Length: 219
Length: 219
Image 1 (cartoon, rainbow over the protein chains, first blue to last red):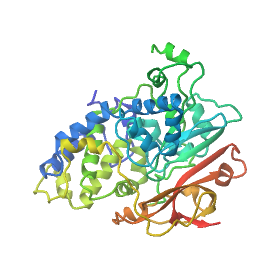
Image 2: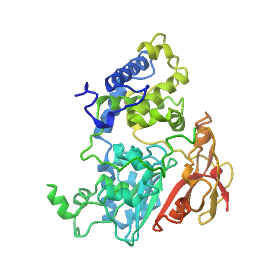
Image 3: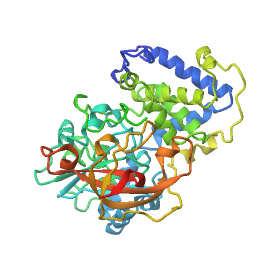
């Protein structure tokens, strides 16, 4: 699988002299790691630990806990909207969040959508590494000019009266969308609510699952 | 460089956004190695995040578009270690180290990895009071530097309103050139869809960027 250059569509790189077949790239990546290691610049064990942290520790489960807490605790929600870094770190059970995290509250009047048109800025401490679509040319180019078209690519249609606000992450500030709490979840625990909070609902390209959808998904 | 292919906001023709269900953190093991090498070399503090971005932006446009995300990162990293004199062109070609490395101030160890899963703080003491305040109407400057900038083309020479003052942050335009400490005031500036995209634009959308003070003039 890994030796087949056509095994994955996102890895294609045609029409370029600098990037040829994937197997060639794999060799170059391995060679660079060897060179950097031999020259004493990096420790491969530290690289292993970074990959493991990305695969196991950081991820949208962190953001989901923050959103769920905001849904059940008005005082926490107020703090989150004032200083999302401070509020998130106060929870203790999520991985530490650096400075300049900003929470954006969705309301019946305004839906928030986050993009980085210039590169791939994303609140990875709370959502994990960005998905391929977030870093792709279609999303980066269209989110700011045709946000409703982008939302329809995700199967999302907002009510006519809802305004759409796009946040282009052009500096070191990072944005976390606080979606609206789904109807029919009165009395739900924070843990149950966190199960409804999808990654896309915290970027603005989706909504939280409804109680029925959650059941359908076997939750 | 500023007016290169990475500045994608508002471009047409890239097609629909294609979300991938159950997307893995990494599609191939080499992607994780590239990300980890990037983090480990970033830890040396030889360049900042803006220097890293600038090296991706100077990739030839055809390469930039044809390469996947982590392929771009790899090509940028390879360029950067050569440009900083850490690795020789001959070593890249040979695929192995031909000389001992030079001494670096910092090397990432396994024990330090947990600290790399938290983003740094980019706020710095303010050298002067902020020129603008929340509610001010501002005009973005019409700048076209050949060096790195974080003012996207679609938001140049436009009227907007300051919505928030974020504090004084490391200025990407100079950080990419090697001055890692120079800081400027940062603002959230919001534009109507019509100001950005003309009379035919959807009146229900607004777009904000995070704009550094040198990008702005009083309106």
